[in-house]
Image (cartoon, rainbow, N blue to C red; front, top):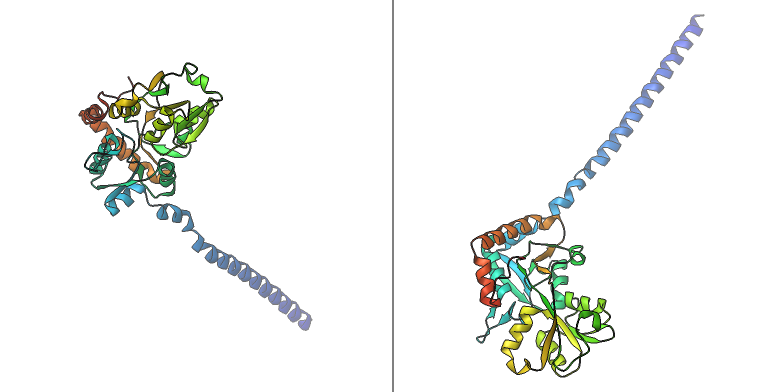
Length: 290
């Protein structure tokens, strides 16, 4: 009897030991899993830490990198001395001063400007970039700083084209990916892509294209600079223009920069600086939608 009782006691102890060992094993496994997963927790904050906001980068660098063409008067061009000037150049300098950094202009073809903003090569584009919903899907924009009209221009002896609806089956000349080229293509025109307004007007004057669409202020400035062409072309339609604004790389990293740019623009609008720059280059105040 004593032997049976001792055997039962040993069995009970053995079972208890096994249960204890099982509990310890489970707790150990959970503890290891906890410790293994713990290092993964910082990944939730890794992206925001790595994605330093653009304003911080610009201020640390000390330069606002600005993309511009440098060949589209009166927005951005070179004067007789070779100095880069224009409405966008002065406003770009204004923005840089407000950010307390230097303005670093980088001249490039229009086709490369928005792609460079998207890739991070440029911080901002100062080149008369029109805002529209399609572009806003890919870029963040500042508040508008000017409002322009666009015009349809044809040869002086052209009696077939009166509005953009007459461009079906016709040919036009414009910079690739510009809102002017997009409008012409939407209306059924075949667009010859060029790099400068001068090339556009040369093609039009010599009858190599039927028409062009461009900013009214740019066409008027070109004709003032080339009076010999004024009798060779004519404006047949004036269309509402897109609000012109500064595009930056899309995403939360640009939010602080855009907020500061908008503050600088609003201050310049309130104190008359924007209007003065517009009048200097356009001959009139185009900084308000009305």
